[in-house]
Amino acid sequence: MADRNFPLTGFSSLAIHEGHIQDPNYAHLTPIYASSTFVYDTAEQGMRRFSGEEKGFIYSRWGNPTMHEAENKIAAMEVYGLDSELPRAYLQASGMAAISTLMLSTLKTGDKVLSHYSLYGGTQDMANTLLPALGIGAIIADLRDLNKAEDCLKADPSIKMIYLETPANPTIQCVDIEELAKLGKKYGKIIACDNTFATPYLQQPFRYGVDFVIHSTTKFLNGHGTAIGGVFIGKDVEFMNTYAYKIFKMLGGNSNPFDTFLLINGMKTLELRMDRHCANASEIANFLSTHPGVSKVNYNGLETHPDFAVAAKQMRHPGAMMSIELKGGLEAGITMMNKLKMCTRTVSLGTCDTLLSHPASMTHYSVPKEQRERYGITDGLIRMSIGMENLPDILADLDQALI
Ligand SMILES: Cc1ncc(COP(=O)(O)O)c(C=O)c1O
Image (cartoon, rainbow, N blue to C red; front, side, top):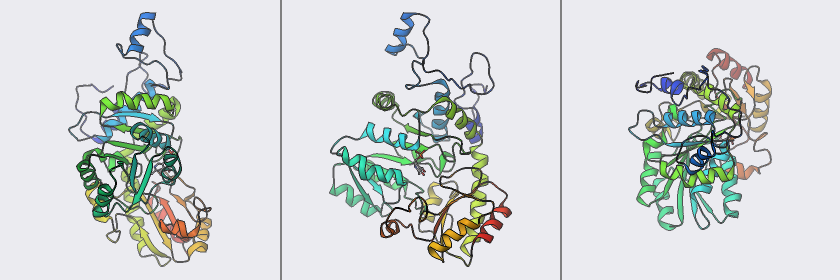
């Protein structure tokens, strides 16, 4: 175990060692604490635990040693290199559970959320159905236009939160976290950011003034596609330890020790994996941008992408997610998916292998064409999560699959 007084200066050192709690049997790796409850030596000790006088685990929905290690590791990565207090994180059963806990612990009837129009489908659904059913409104605007964002804030004082997702699904659009956080603070709003596509290695929203960060840990943080998970992180530790903790316990969307064990081991290689994912993605975007079968490459690392400058400002590297539009529309999309020889046909993202999905025939099959096209999901759009295979093999597979 690393000496607590030894300063960990590198991102991987932190990702590998931070948060580790040495168990009493000196296991090298974090044990899977598969226990629903924790015991007390005496009734008095139980009383001290419940009153908060003595630190210790009580019940795994409220907290668990395996989960606690992952929570502290992610929190430390989100403030790596920043001169700030360690935020408080709660590990959740999924990214959607993290978003639900965030929304339900910060918003109430009559409040509104302001968000960008390119959002993960589940979050969009929540904004369209669950939040309105609770009397919480959602205003969806193009938050890349800061004047428009300010107009929305001026026009509607009931906006309580600005919710960002950057880069966003599936157009890879980016919004300016720093400018939107400044604007939000000027009007006294809460700022939250979904950092799933970037991970804390590529982007740290707390650096730019946001209050809350959420992740679907299912993706690059786990890195191997072995578990669904999420995390809800807040920099106001007092709020996180009190009201947010109460709501977290009440909603019961906690993770579990086995999935957390997989997550902890995945996160140790985050830097190495992201470097390889990103290096491959840059080369692939360049290759596809001159390919005759491709009419458009949505990758924020290309100077032609409208959000190139914003991505360059706030991200270490533009990341490993991209989408392309095929000249041949729906038919070309289906053909390309069927011709893949090595890359994987599936939804989700952030695993070792390169994943391709065709929203028009898969995730958005039941969404009317006009509606999905409004969000940039055209017939020939293919979304890609670039993996860590050797670059020539990915290039060769994509090239032979494209018409
Ligand atoms: C950006 C983003 N946020 C949140 C989620 C939801 O995560 P989960 O599937 O772990 O609930 C996803 C899922 O794809 C996502 O892509």
